[in-house]
Length: 92
Image (cartoon, rainbow, N blue to C red; front, side, top):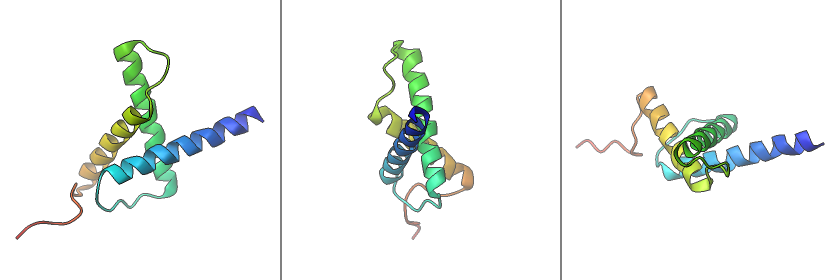
């Protein structure tokens, strides 16, 4: 039972962090809910590793750093797909 609760907590954390990252970066994102969860979990993992290396702290990264790293991952994903960071093309 504890393992099931742990998996549900991971899904919820990934969804919240991924959704906040998508809200922080304007524009369309053709990501499914599973991709959003994966984005949030990847950002949280990388943020935790960076915080561990920088501060030698076992407490984790925190929500702000996790959302920041997830937003940077989303920005990189958009750039790799050839998309724009702004929601509209502003050429005149």
